[in-house]
Image (cartoon, rainbow, N blue to C red; front, side):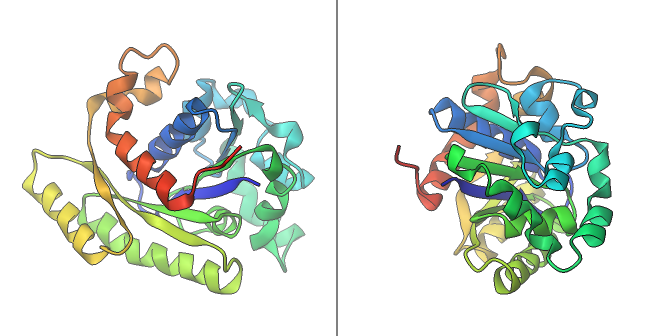
Length: 258
């Protein structure tokens, strides 16, 4: 059965998609069977992992999978080990669908959908939008772990508590097996004293769950959305900051034994 990990925070610009995408790619490179689920209507994870125009997935996305109750027909096979359940702009209609068709148990819909394929994968990586709305709640209710992303700013720092409150709500009412894998301090600019100071503040306040690794801002990582993972001359530099985080995440969630 797959280990399901959601990446989230309601603050935009915290590198949720990049981190989720790199994690999914690293897992696949190690031979794990990975399903990346794009729960953001911006569809940036879809773009990153497929390097295709999201319009090509119209009518074949996670929204259609949710409506069908089964994702099998909507999964795109990016590589032998990395598959994607894509998104597009129409995912913005998810809340309307959930409250119309599943008013009493809308929060568990994604969990039921993924149950059809969770034995086919070792890991399911879920990217979420910068909000505390239905896509995030359904993702938390479908997951075993959540990684909280935080870039080095006051607004991102203050968002952590509110996001953790949402996680706690999901744990108490819907998914008591959900665990916080940790808080990742991301996009830290080592040249700025305020950036380093916020990284230290976050580390002190959340010392019991924070990842010890601090991901520094790098231009090569920023360009990964343009260059992708295949035939990318900068790939080693682009993902280097994430390797210690990835290794620690695997220690915290447990590797899959084939």
